[in-house]
Length: 157
Image (tube, rainbow, N blue to C red; front, side):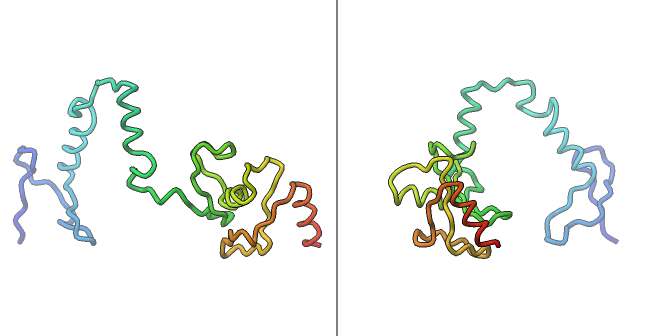
């Protein structure tokens, strides 16, 4: 029979533990350990409890964990799972969303013609393959919104 270890808080009791390790080899904490940890994190046991953080400090924390410095940074580029379109981060772009992202094919066409696109201008993919995002400049065509709608009505019929 295995010897059970007494509780880490010093109460002298032997806490219940289902098993010492999980399937991945990580140690599963006993009930007493979890309760002790929650006391340390929440309430008066937390060193930040009751302290007010200044706006300057909050801004420094935001800057230290944003963009390329964030641990989940993926290069400022992502593919929308629903549409398959590629979004890239272009800070300061007039048509970017709140996070600075805009459709990659719009940025490519803007670079080609040397100006920002208007809201009524659409970029049409000549070979619209949903499985691959072909944003090659030869595959992109600039159209007005009405021309784009007319084109898709004609091809759908």
